[in-house]
Length: 313
Image 1 (cartoon, rainbow, N blue to C red):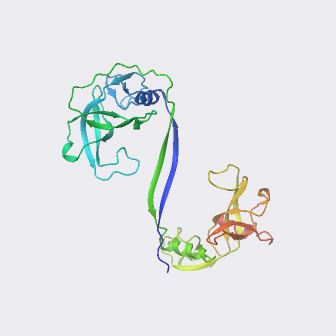
Image 2 (cartoon, helix red, strand yellow):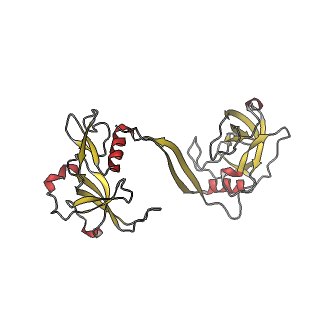
Image 3 (cartoon, rainbow, N blue to C red):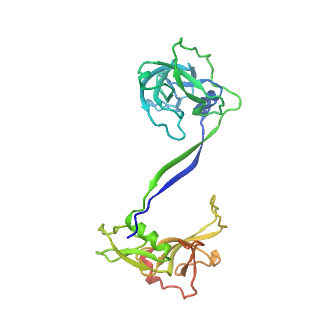
């Protein structure tokens, strides 16, 4: 049994969203060193502003400027800042109720240590040197011993409003496929496709999962399947994926390998996309390094009878 695999994995994508009039004004204001809240029908000022009253659900648009100074309402010390956080040195996460606001804003506080932070301490905004209309235009908060600063009474109308933002989303973690899929991956390196047989229903699952999804019992008996198989269902892809060097249109299919009780995914090549069909017999074409099937191509055999694969649709 090979050692169970593990590897670092990063899932990353840019999340793009448009802004309504309230959020647009708020972020544009940060770009101009102005902090805006929104006033509810009951007279409360919410910072950061929202478009609908959280109590009555009524739409809100009465923007009001608040001060860049405020009071820490609660906090937590961050001993080890991570990539992308506001500060590279240890800092405090704080909720700050800005002067003139009735709710608190979450951000970082630059302080020399946890002993320098307390609930009720006074702070002020430290603006970023370069601002683009994002929450990061507030670089952080910093301690403030002076008088409360007074807002200028801005009404929330600006030229060149920010209408959308791109928020990069990223997740870093260590992935392990487990015992069963480690054996499957190791088999691919030898150009063998291994599944595991359920001791109860006797189905062979590929890729192996370590347990039967139907019976719920553990599986350990390895069975080599394929390498040939049958197309059960398929779709024609017409939109080119970023960073994928495959010309569209192409076909992605479910392929029931001979001896398997479950179809797996694979790309179909070596045939015009409009000639791919259910029942087509295919075989793997291995990647240049021989570690996995790059795609499947027709074998030239007669199509499989529908009765032989209908249970795997």
